[in-house]
Amino acid sequence: MVNFLIHRLFGWAVYAPLQKWVGGLPFFAQLFAVLLAADLVQYWTHRAYHEIPFLWRFHAVHHSAEHMDWMAGSRLHMFELITTRVSILGVLYLLGFSESVMNVYIIVVGFQAVFNHANVRLPAFFAQAPVKYLIVTPDFHHWHHSSEREAIDRNYAAHFAFIDYLFGTAVKSDRRFPGKYGVLGDYMPASFIKQQLFPFTWKG
Ligand SMILES: [Zn+2]
Ligand SMILES: [Zn+2]
Image (cartoon, rainbow, N blue to C red; front, top):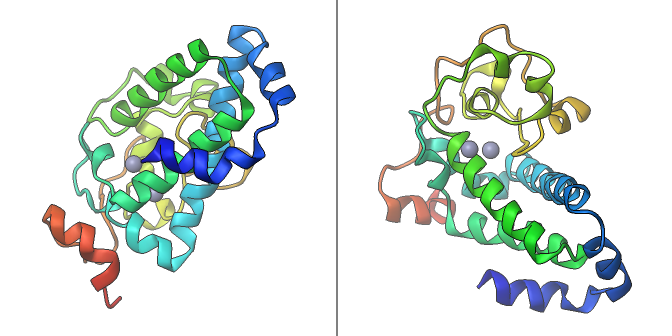
C-alpha cells in the first residue's frame, strides 16, 4: 500500500537529473543525507501528530505504552503507520538514493525503531556530550514517551538528536530516564481493535 501511494502521490514530481546526482554521490555522503532527510520529514510529521489535535487522536495510540520495551515501537495506529511511511519514503524516493544506501537505511531505521524503545541502559558514554547531541538512543526516546511535564511534546527525532536541539524541542533533564510513561489522563483502551477505533470514538 505504501509503495502504491508513493507512486500515486509523488510520481508526478520525479526529476531525473536530481535523482541521478544524489544517486551518484559517495556512499557515506548518501547515507548521512538519507538519514538526515528522513529524520527532518519524520521530525515535522511527528511534531504535527503531537500539535494538531485531530492527528493526536491517532498518535496517542503510540504513547499509550506505560512500560518501555522493544515492542513499544510497534504500537501504532494503522493510519499513522501508513502516512508516516508514505511521507518519509516518498521524499527519499524523489531524492533518488542508490539501492545499496536504501538497504542500509532500512536496516538502521528498523534497528533504531526497536532499540530506542527497548528497556536498556547504555554505558554512561552514550548519555554524555557529544554522543547525546548526535544520535537518538533509548535515553533520548524514552523521554519522548514520558508523561512528566518537562517531557511533553519533546524529543521528536528518530535518528539525530541534534534536530531537537536545533528546533528547541529537546528535553533538558538532569535525570537519565523519566519515572512515568504513557498519556496524561490514561484514557486509551487496552485492546488492539479498540485502539484502532479510538480516533473515531474518543470524546476528549
Ligand atoms: Zn510522539
Ligand atoms: Zn516511540
